[in-house]
Amino acid sequence: MKLFACDNCDQVVHFDNRHCVRCNHRLGFLPGDLAMHALEPCEEAVWQLVSDADRKVRFCANAGLDICNWLVEGDGEFCAACRHNRLVPNTDTQDGIDRWRRIGQAQRHLFYSLLRWKLPHPDRGEDPQGGLVFDFLEDSLQGNGNVVPAMTGHEEGLITIRAAEADDATREQARSSMNEPYRTLLGHFRHEAGHFIWNKLVRDQNGLDDFRAVFGDERQDYLAALQKHYAAGPPLGWQDNFISAYASSHPWEDFAECFAHYLHIVDTLETARAFGIAIDPRGHEEISGEVDFLPYRAKSAEQLVSAWVPLSLAINAIQRSMGQPDAYPFVLSSPVVAKLEYLHRLIQGAAAP
Image (cartoon, rainbow, N blue to C red; front, side):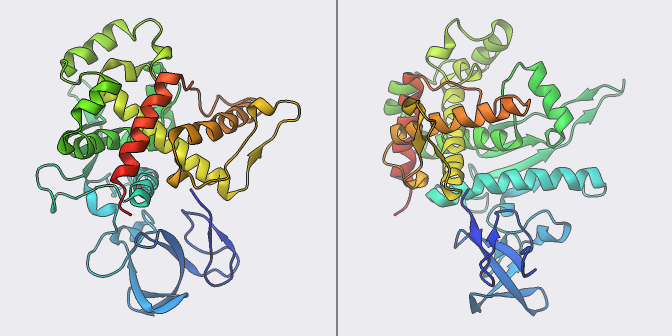
């Protein structure tokens, strides 16, 4: 994520800021510009950009509960991200509102990447059968008092996210019980969006042969593959060929996991570049690196990985120094880099000029 600047006073502004900390101007993110803007009130519920008084905007309808800080220009009640929501957390309770705020923050980070690359993301109005739509589901309670967790998943453009995973304790419990090294809301969004992107850029674009040459044949029984994975675990030596144990369960999951990691890497490298972070350990040139290119316009996955490995090593070392687990507990083997290269070509080829 890049840094922004207040249009009024040039103070550094972050993606999730609501007000400038220096001049206190109201701030909002305009998806069409991919930029944060300082605003002046114009008329009821209407604002004008400080940088261009002729441009009138409104806040997303979800701004009222401080769920969203994105702007709408023209018609429409919801912003470019929130217009895809169908079921949202219960706003009758503070817990529900807090969950939705954390969910919405992760969702907007996903959409930042989709918009940066101009990847397809039709809603159900534009594509009734396979458009992108989100249900944020609450857990259910059985008659015996047992809680049945809602399922996070994807089916033909419908992405479901378990709302309870917006709570750190619940998410950590799930991470631990499933023996996962990494589990975040943003990771869920990026992974499930990977399934949607597979539909749009691989299946619907007659790209199955190229996909199968890299990831394998997705026609193998999906449910049976998942059952085998959960019953027996990943194959011995899975680390040599897959980014995660779950990626080894089926080619669809391998693609979705790699898509999520591609977004993790690109967005974090953009953040490092925005802050001018370079890794230059004295006497260890082999793990030095600098983000001297635009990650969202990288030449190749190899270029991304060459910058990512030193940065992730440094981040992990800092985490350990603070008594925290590794922020990026993964190894990028040569077969995984080849899969990221495939994704790089797919995404860059789909990105509109």
